[in-house]
View 1 (tube, rainbow, N blue to C red):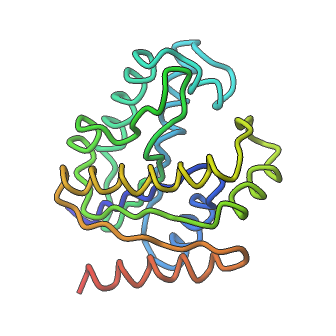
View 2: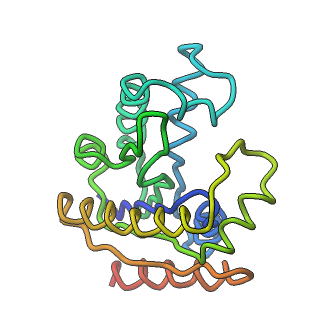
Length: 190
């Protein structure tokens, strides 16, 4: 089995942009998007019409979608597979983990990466993204989400045994963030 690199970050951090740029820098790599796999399952079940509706579903339904997505993604093959997902989802029932034990067990990550940016940059990116229906939050709430993200990543690293790293994605520097990840991959393959 090759490298299975789980890349996480809170909404608006630029994670998907960084992952796509990393895919270009790491030849032959594959990107699997956890939320897309969940959404495809939710559409089959006729539970939602828009991706952002998933987080409003009862946690038990989300858990079913999460299990199906983890199983599908665990079958992904390649020397370097990037799994683009979230560490947690803000639901009406509270923050729900995106990498609970059963998901970690299915995915078998070799590395865990947390993409970060400043709270102001995250708020600006969220406001500019008209393709998503995001909750309005304050800069203080974003700061709390960033801290929560580090806690969740530490727990996932502890449970999985996979090393963790933090990747800074400052405004206008997504190429540098992608190169940091590419360097990590090159070091892991050596």
